[in-house]
Amino acid sequence: FEQHRDQYMDHLLQVSVTGDWRPWLAFFLTGVTDQAQDALKRSRRLRQLSEDYRQLLLERRETSNTVRMLDLVLQTPY
Image 1 (tube, rainbow, N blue to C red):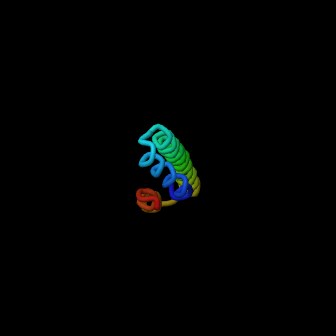
Image 2: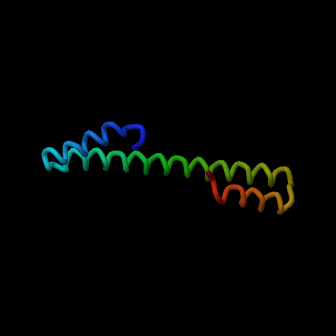
Image 3: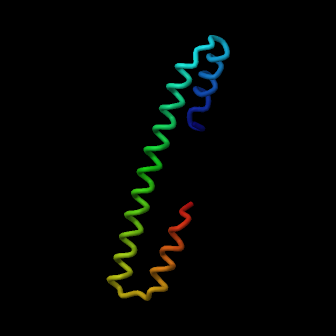
């Protein structure tokens, strides 16, 4: 929403002026949909990255501590 702040504010102003919520609601729901799709894509990429690293560690016969460390690092992906 931050990228489209001006449009967001314009839609809210139009709600105040006309009382018609439909354009703002459509804009808002499109933004929610876009954000949800982006979150899904990122979570899938993160899961794949985790699996790739885990496989690499197993192929290198790393210790279980190394694998646990990977799990801890990926627990809170910022």
